[in-house]
Length: 203
Image (cartoon, rainbow, N blue to C red; front, side, top):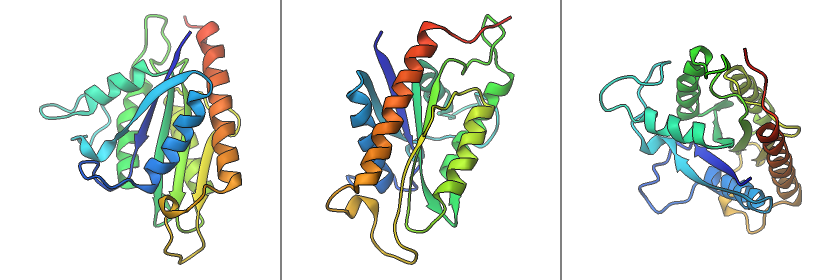
């Protein structure tokens, strides 16, 4: 069975320019690693969509979250990527998580949360320490709304404190970062295959 993945880039930078963000760079590293396990997918920038504030799946006219929600539910693996700002996930990332909150009250025909049997991972970049704090926030939120996280479900890079170098500017991906991206991809694909073969029980 072919697995699919969706990467949601929660950078603050619009994708309507040609500029690649550091979060893009990390997500592309993970997607390339996922492809080695037969997983296909793509990356979207949340900031390019009109995602209205709220905690329901449809916040009315001009809300573009419903289309993204459909893509999340069609994918076997969700990789949520965010930069670190002020030691926190980006405001865009928090908006995405707030909209995913609707899954808490939405069930399938087996009485299970509609996000069950889907795997999630996390991609983080920043120039100061905070990756563990941010991954902890995202792990909790993604698990709360029904996703299953594999072992070692995060790949991240942080530069030195007060530094000026971005991840995308590195001439070579650090060996440890490449290793964690490979591990995340391998474990996510393995877990997604297991959940496709034997889903969580329902009512």
